[in-house]
Image 1: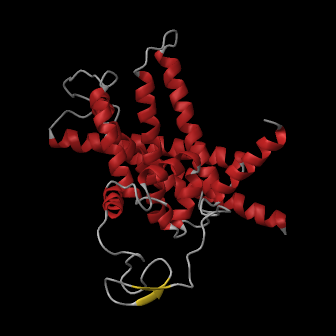
Image 2 (image 1 turned 180 degrees about the vertical axis):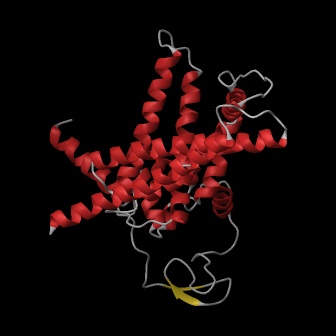
Length: 322
């Protein structure tokens, strides 16, 4: 394979990333169809009155096969094809969905439920990495350890919870982006739904690979590789979705992770305060109510600072272009 062939395939792959429907033939507008459902006359692939597909008639083996495939998400907007897109063009897929091209993807919340269910079943099969010891909760440290131990046994819920912490940081840092400017918080929710599905796919692969007999590699090295892979996955999503360069995407993604970690700590502290108050536990000298207030104020200032920094960078770029 010569260099010209490699460049040709790369150009085709790049074109598919930007628009996977580029080779789809337009529907036939010259033939008039009679809708068997409502009796309307129409041209194209679907009835404009009731939405039934053109050519729908008597039940055949082919129609049964299509119905079964659609029941399991293998027909229009198929689940496997959406997962394939999520692996190879995640940011572009999310951008298409936010801009209204909903027919390119399987419904994201349904997709997340199915992937999370599969992850849950898989973790029950390979349950070697999520074993913990139940201890009495007397302070914040034991509360946090037991909570994380439960989450590690339910990795699907852990991923959903962690991704929800990224909604506000992503909104603050990527608000002024060239490709998806001024995205809203509801759109940020669906961004994290797609991210959750992508990272769950990664952990499915990670769980299957960890079950293989691999010698000579310590657990710390494997965990470091896992964390680096997660960072690169999120960086790839944000770069494709928002259109910043490598440097702009890298520092913003790093700040999203940092803010998410701070919000995780704040959520854990608040949860422990409610838990200790409800169970009448003695106050933890390190994580008091005053400490929660300070952590909350720090998180608010951090979000505001990220928003101001993103706005300042965007304003400076616009000034330089003038």
